Length: 251
Length: 121
Image (cartoon, rainbow over all chains, first blue to last red; front, side, top):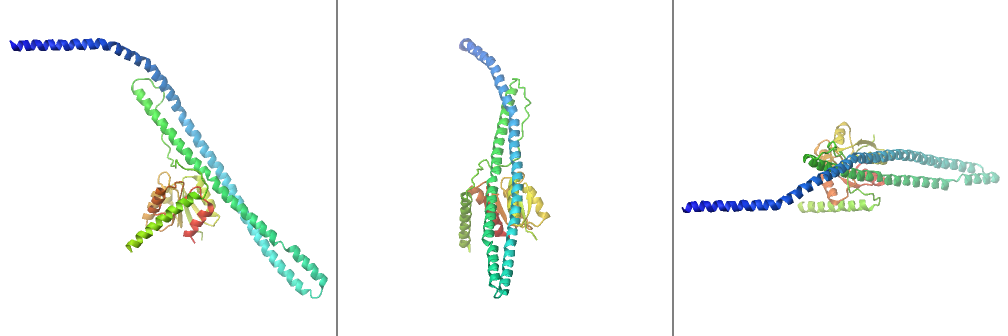
């Protein structure tokens, strides 16, 4: 008897539970309807967003190519400028050699004129003329000035060479930007893949662009002051000093 | 006979800048666009000094220095690092790998000539 009562109680409990579930279901139906309606409205929005992402993504390779073109163009221009500087330096070298030859010739000519002066003996009139020739021939100061000017030009070409290295620094910075935008394209591709997996139509061919095999220093900066090298030199000196101290300890 | 200097750098302009500075001093210059190419060039000629960048594709400067120092035929070649990396970590790592000097970009042509002269008479 008591077992039958227990079974009946169980059945009543289950019926109560079912009743609660139905009541809860009734309450949830409007929420589920709202959710379904939201998703239905949201799909075109996702499609719209994915379209926008597709468009942005498709432009990235073009932007990346443009950056590569900038790097290649500046590289080419820099090579041409360097070739010209090379030619100028060679000409300056030849000019220095010519000035040195002139100096030697002038010294030889002056020695000959001095010998002639000694041979003139008592001929004072001729001696005055020879002295005037010696004075006219004295271009040593002018030649010295010319050599200094050539050295100044050579020093300027060195400075130009140093300044032109800005191209290498900008090439590294552009490579860093390129790397970044291709990484963004890859991430967007991943996102579109995820959208495509949900069944939402994605137009684009989801081929992933590969990161270029270029190595760069993203923090490269153009600072032609000697301080950078001074800083590195001090690191090297400290390193050597500590090594010497270690060597002393073990000697 | 001209002393031979091998430059390893992936930047064509830097290769040109360094070559330009050293050829003016009468050195013969060989160029490689990464560490791998430099390693391949080494057995083909007697190199007196190497100038290397650190950031390079295929084989970077650290690996190049290691490869040179591990080869009995090349282990005594002086190596100068020329890099835009200027942190103490990179400098210490470069020296620990076996480089003799470290120079930062942009470099002064006179300074590189001075550094080379320290190792090549």
